[in-house]
Image (cartoon, rainbow, N blue to C red; front, side):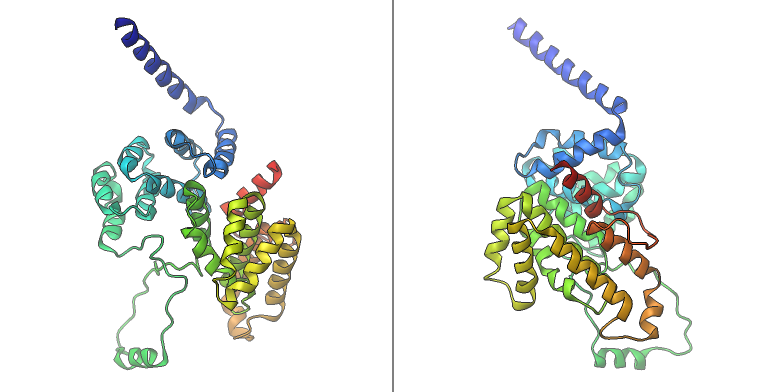
Length: 351
């Protein structure tokens, strides 16, 4: 009995020593590359026990320094939390200590986890993050939305709503500019990355359904954001489906259930994945970007459109081109590479 107890103590000591030795000495860039590949393969071979170690590598590598470029990692953490409700609290506690500047990741991952009782978990974890009290209260009160509560697009005001607002507005009152914190999938590219991260952690098709709903935007010529995000959705679906037979079969099954605006681009995704012809998807999307840059919006081909386009045009050229594999298009990039670009590039090189 004493021998067994000694062996257990020794085993525990060795595991602790290995964990302690792993963090500071590993080169952050190298370890993050390993974690990227691990995340991509996770859904086919879940490794729940190593999620805490992977998350620590993310924090150690300053992955969340630019939040808009870290969506796929945030989505993965959220999916990992939601994948095992019985152990969710234990998993979240294992992430601590968390750098104060990265505590927002834990808050948002819990809110995005899809756990039925995520609010209770948020309240339990809140004392560990007093500096994020405002953010936590925002989610608990419903002022900030969970991942699946975020709408595809912001609701557009009708003519009567606009007229009512104009009539009731005080013309002499000085308006204060407020930061617009509303989210929608049509205006925030990082949400697409978050959905992919959640899928990699869970294998659930719920985030895939939301991505499929974005496909009609790949044919949009009305707004820059829609064309960008729709093109990214179409290309990432095709690219990941090439390597994921189950996802390919799921998308093929969706063809019979989807409406015409979704069915056409979805059929292109399935055909590209079946024939491993991603180049056609790339070429079509890049051509659409060029057409929008040249001709402008279908709805507003005038100076007002190009005036509001501004930096967005450069961002579109950079994001779409990078996401679609065109790294040299002669357009100055004004934003960093998002995860859907970076990980696509990384994983494609591994094949």
